[in-house]
Amino acid sequence: MYNGKSVGVVIPAHNEEAFVGRVIETLPKYVDRVYAVDDCSTDGTWAEIERHAERANRTRGESTTLADGGAAFGGVVEPIRHETNHGRGGAVKTGYRRALDDGIDVVAVMDADGQMNPDMLARIVEPVAEGWADYAKGTRLLHRDRKQMSNWRFFGNSLLTYLTKISSGYWKMSDPQNGFTAIAGDALARIDVDRLYDDYGFLNDMLTTLNVHQCRVVDVSHPAVYGDEQSGIRYSTFVPRLSVLLARNFVRRLTMRYVVHDFHPLVLLYFVGISSTVAGVLGALFTLVTLLGSGFGFVRGALSLLLVVVGVIALAVGMAYDLQTNERLRVGQYDGLEPESVGREGR
Image 1 (cartoon, one colour):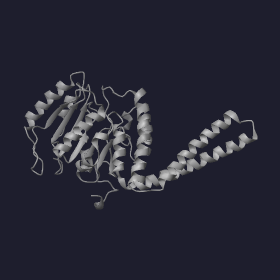
Image 2 (cartoon, rainbow, N blue to C red):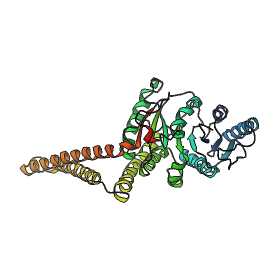
Image 3 (cartoon, helix red, strand yellow):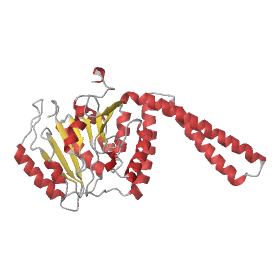
Image 4 (spheres, helix red, strand yellow):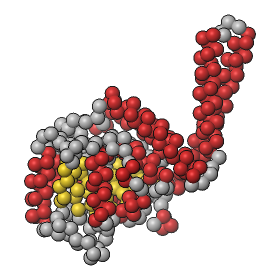
């Protein structure tokens, strides 16, 4: 229990036999339930999960009772094994479903690669347990020890951060690929877990889904931890797939938030901005290729430039409206103290 709230931790694991046992061993004592999900590993990950789960359950007892007294678990650590590979997101979704069935108040996620310091778990859990936010996510980009992240990794993360800001509507969040998260049980129950993306774009998809349901999100700074672990991301396929996912989610968010649930003129601004910019760029290219030497070509080029200018202005105004509309869904960066942007009304 953490401040009177039950805490569950999902540990998605794929070929992490060298690290997953240590992750299970070092989880804090206030964690009530652990869902260790082996996503069809081909090494000894499953054996390590079973061994450490048996040890943890023997050490901490065979049952844990929640605050309401109505739910008792058969063990602290529940080993779960996928017979086929579902992807990182698919493994987290399995843990989420079990946590929902168990009625957990706060559900955190810690990867099995040892990159997430268990001492930082309380910092991730607290904003959700205290009711300041519906979803807390770690960020390595705002911490003073960011220098542990390579320049290349920092550049890629910063680019994905900007694109995810546009797609998700959380304009002031950072480090969207950070899987160190916690979500309130009632917020988790409001979203359709089964429809979330299965692969490494799961975190980006989660943010968009949370925005559609108008959930409050907080960034929690923590240091980056890198060791001998190997990333499972294949950038040749990850980047194109994620780009498509972000574009799709952007359209889905605008449709659900500003057309289906409530109408907002920023939809028209985005539509005019994108259409005008694309038309202007295509018109300019056509002019350069076919009509560069004629007076008519000059007129068409000027019109194309005007379309681009109008499109950029419309996009900028649309983004400003979007940022303003979503401001209330952002809780200021959390660093171990109550966020300044949340007062008693936010609780």
